Image (cartoon, rainbow, N blue to C red):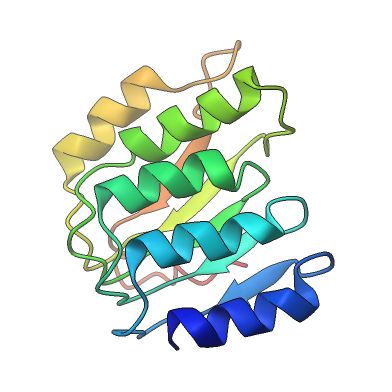
Length: 150
């Protein structure tokens, strides 16, 4: 994938696309990805961007704000993403701006830069009115298939 190829795809599908997998893309830039994926903000609820070298904490944060309907995110191998706090901050900002935000986010993050400590900190910050977490992140399936969920 390249920025141009992704832009071409979304120019035809952005009004209807629900899920997108653009993993293992070393030619996609973070800023390009944000700009292009914003076109699908109204419909995209599943995004798989594993092992995309252009994805870092800033991109994750911007995606959180740009794609508030996202319910499933695959960032496996995005080793420049160290925290989900920015992503969750973006979702809160989108909701405060009047956007419809998915009630829960499921994240696959094995081989990312996210640590258990970082995940615990984000979990303390983000929960619903009942105190339940608003996201679930799989850092390691533990051999039980915990990451096999779509």
